[in-house]
Image (cartoon, rainbow, N blue to C red; front, top):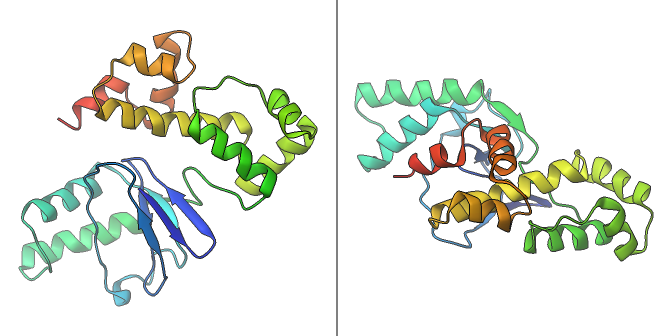
Length: 211
């Protein structure tokens, strides 16, 4: 799912959520089939929640509560037990790690061109120096733009883009080895190590969570 609010653009894999505070104008784009839950929390209960749109690294308890509400098709919480669950949900969100964005974007003309190319081909193994040559800038200039605009290195941004692509390919049922090769890894073990570093589980364990 991709969400835009003002000049901020958010993408999030399944173990993350996008938080939009009350009154923030936003739009959402889903480029492929997706299952998701949305929770609408009254502004009076959001005093200790983020005041600006951001990404939240949600845990198992938050996902379980949201899935329970969705499975019972709750539109509002009225029963005492559901109100208590709602309060637990808010408590958990208040203590959740806040990220500026899982995969940030940039308005910089040069950097946005590179990010578009990496999104189109996350398996590319071109180095930052090679991209700098293609874009007719120095490697140092490009590296500085990544830190300044995105808050991370070229390697970290590309790894996150590969992880998001891997999630989509896992849901399509592709073999682990095939996904690794598609994403530029010479061995399955290297791909699995990247995936585990990003979400704490192997690709196969992650796939089983959707079954």
